Image (cartoon, rainbow, N blue to C red; front, side):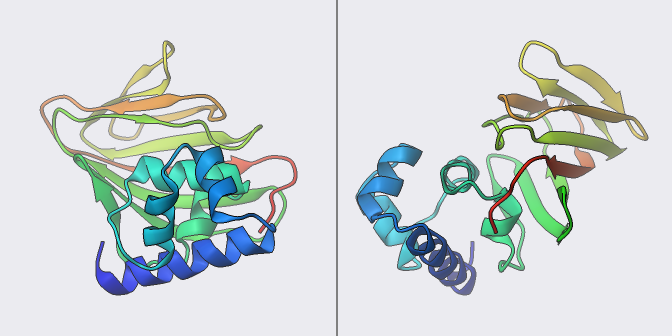
Length: 175
C-alpha cells in the first residue's frame, strides 16, 4: 500500500476507534494484534495484511468496506487483490468489491460480522470458494451465496480468477 493510502487508513482507523471510546490497547487485544503494530498503523506506517484489516473491522463492528472506503488503491497480499467498488448507505448495507486471485492461491477469510452474507460472481478463471468444509467449484458466470459470518476460503488452480464480491450486512451496522 502506498504512503498516502497508509496515512488515510491510519487516520480513519483512529477516528473509528476513538468514536467507540476504545484505547489502543483495547482494540489491539480484541483484534489479536500487537499494540505497537496498531499504533504504527494509526500513524500511517507499517504494512497491514488483509487479515489484520479484516480483524480490526470485525472488532470495530464495521464492514471491511467502511474501514477501507477512503483508500483508492487495491489492497493486496499473497496473490489476492481487493478493491472496494461501492458501499451502500441503505439497510441492509451492501458492499461491492472487485477481487483478483493469482494462480495457486488459497485465501482463508476471517468471519464477517454476525448475519453477513456474501455473494461471488466469477468473471473469469476457475475458483473453489465458500465456507470452510462446504466449498464449491466455480467457473466464469457462476454465482455462489453463503453465510459469511464464519471462516470461508477462495482457492485457485492454475489460472487467475477475477470475481465480483458483494457482502450484505444484515442487522445493525455501525458506520
